[in-house]
Length: 143
Image 1: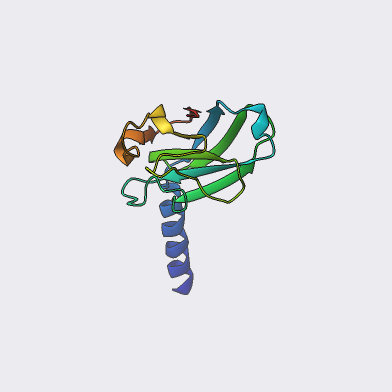
Image 2 (image 1 turned 90 degrees about the vertical axis):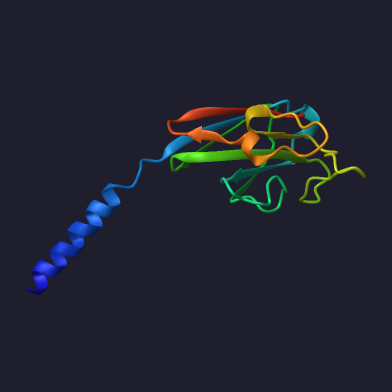
């Protein structure tokens, strides 16, 4: 009897894990890096819908950072299918945050998915969301 229960449990777990959606590859490419930024840190935020802290640089759902080695930067990341937004910025002075001027506008190079160009306020999460339902390249131009 115990063997039947164990087999049933293992079968349930196998079926449950088998129903998990296949992860998709997000290939992120950042454009607009300058030679003077080599050695600086690039901060990358991956955001899920509903994150009320968007686009503030310290509270993404997934936070990554990388050292800039050239004027081209690419990163591959496997994620579950769904909606995401991406933010990036170059920390030119090494203080670990996106510096802003007196009016709240970024003083360091930054970019967001869908290449939304903010006018008088930070971009909205809904403007930056994209569907990752197949592997794809997300191109972000620094501003």
